[in-house]
Length: 271
Image (cartoon, rainbow, N blue to C red; front, side, top):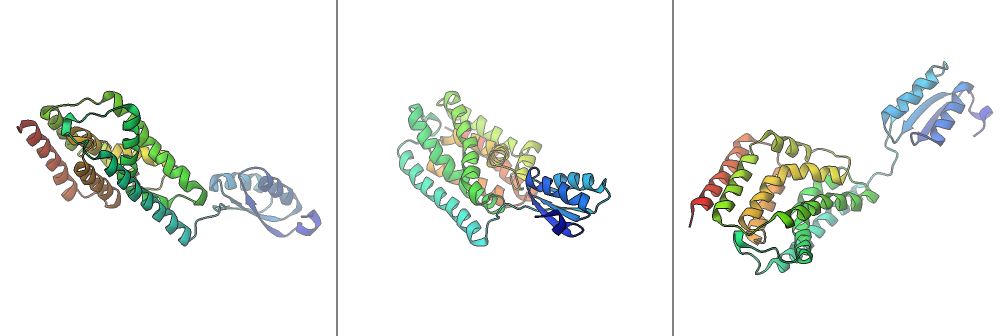
């Protein structure tokens, strides 16, 4: 690209927020070229460079453009379907591993290694279906494994906290924890996290943190009523999925929360 060729002409400079794009833009500006700047790092970076060029009396237009290769419709669909296939496979593994382990609140977690294997398959089965829309919206071809992996890493960390804290318990504690789970559903923190995990996010880890904040009450309910119960696991997975996909509606959400509280009371005072 020679100066004589580009002098006085309009040029579109694309690239990262630094390096070649900036160098070319600064080279063109003194030669009288009108420079349009497109940066994958975002509009702020392009506008900053445009302002520098404008100080030299040259025309510069900042253009925000994501220059990374986006997913095609077919690739996006494939990524979402792959996420759902992984979830289905995790359900098969979880059901196989959990057979005969359900003893309600008296359930033992077993060895750490055995628990980790069951927990990972449980979380993948329960949480990946609700993550599929986020994969459709945000993740790119190369980012899908990192997005899904970092999302599941959040739930893996939860498992590492659960293992030393969990103890087999009776109906009174199970009921009290379930009541607490129902009351959490009514808190502003729950509503805010639920809203955030329905929006676009920067990473799978951030998505996982917001989804943890949204679903922590329901997970507490699972731990209280039967951490190895396929029935409770299925019900709570459906609630998590519904809350991710459906908008917040007090006419629905409040009765659900009160029903969880009522369940907790029933468990606590029952035989």
